[in-house]
Image 1 (cartoon, one colour):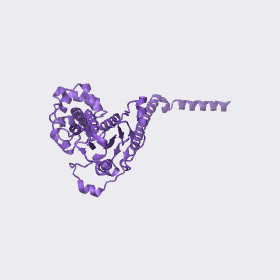
Image 2 (cartoon, one colour):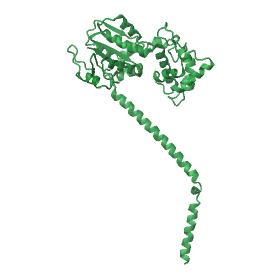
Image 3 (cartoon, one colour):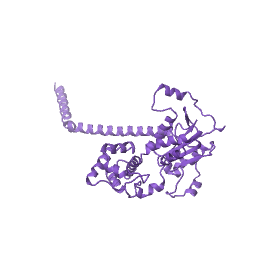
Image 4 (cartoon, helix red, strand yellow):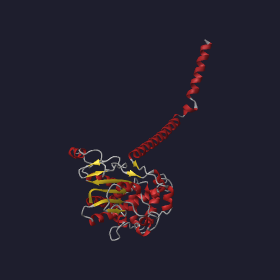
Amino acid sequence: MAAPAAAASAKSLIRKLLLHSPSQRSPFRFSISTAATKATYSKLASKNKANRANKQKAELLLKRRTRSGRELDEDGFSKQFGKDNSAHVPVLLGEVLDVFASVPLKSFVDCTLGAAGHSATEVGGKHSDPGIQGVLMDLGMSSMQVNNAERGFSVLSDGPLDMRMDPQASLTAEDIVNTWPDSELGRILRDYGEESNWFSLQNKIVKARSTGGLHSTNELVNLIRTSTSWTRGGRHGWIKTATRVFQALRIAVNDELNTLRDSIHSCFDCLAPGGRLAVISFHSLEDRIVKQTFLNITNCSQESTGEEEEAECSNFPSKIEPYNGKNETWIKQIVQGKHAVILTKRPMTPSESEEKLNPRSRSAKLRVIQKK
């Protein structure tokens, strides 16, 4: 009887020790620690998931682009353009020459002062009669405009909040910043600048009106700098945000997107049958408008789901015939329409060597349409 009693006593002692151990005496502390661990794990898992999604998106965009196979001669490029950032360096020059190599260029217009199509609209007005074999529209801004502080385009140089392409125009960036309704200001920051932090910036710009408003590029840049956290792009992340804000204001001041649509139609109307229009854009908003306008010209609107329109476009062959008996290897995929052929179903982008030698070219996209 003594042995079983001793065993029972030992078991009771062990049970008491376990029940009153420090870890068991603080179940609340244990649960908090577990919750914190779960929260940290969940946060890391979400971050990893977002990183994977961004990586997959980047890979998809890389697959969908049609990168040029041309390679630039580094020595020749450096000898011709050197390291002068103010010099005008042609973008996709070899690719543009390929586009027009098979076209008998008796009449050709180079709208490299494009500024989202302003000069191209003038070209369309001056050459109302069809007969031009080739038109090149380069929508990039010249370094002279960007670096001229008095025009108000530069993020890094102080100047008036102007941003007018046409000095005779009445609307300026200062007018928009200081007088436009809150919702309209936010819309252009969101839609034209594609700025994710648009709502906060909108509120801070509107708040600045109560203390006199913003009247110079430096005042606007300083507001953006103090409104942009380091987590958004690092120490110099504010420069990217400022660039997007300046882009949005410039587009709104000059009504660039509507001008671009009109310019493309004007230039296409000028083309002779078989003539080509090539457009080089430098940001997604412009490229999206070029793409949609080309589709509208061909009567193959991407936004339309009507069976008749889809059937009308699908009746045409999927391959383009050699132009004047010449095969053109740069043409990969095309879109056939009633009035025109889009020769670049996907935009052509610079080669790796061109991006390396001329970083400004990295966002360039070339689209080409041919009149029937």
